[in-house]
Image (cartoon, rainbow, N blue to C red; front, side, top):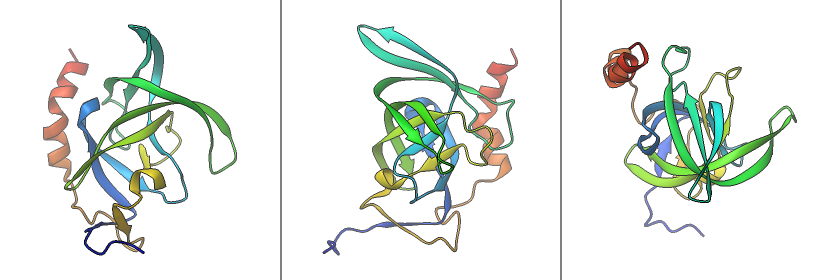
Length: 165
């Protein structure tokens, strides 16, 4: 039986979230209860060793349809897994842990890194990242608030300046 004293967040089928520890203030995520793990669009993935630990450096296109904006990130690898896509294609992926900012909630999640160029969404939030924290209303989207194009340009302006220098 669920504890009724715990307030859960209501989400639509897509929401804005943040990954500030990776330097990604806004990214649109598809809420996907069919996926067990969460995935982040990453490319130019490079494994490096740092003090005997495996890290990855990678680039992210945080905004859909805007490939001229890319952010460089790095994270400690906590696992490597073979993940099957919805089409059955199996792919070896690095797994990292970072803090997800979802409305008022901030908590650690695991993310697999995958090139999601052919996909619409740059990020998927799977069941493991959502369990016991949210309710999902698939009839709606952006229940935590919409972000305007102006907000995106202002927030990412300094990243764009760095990329064009």
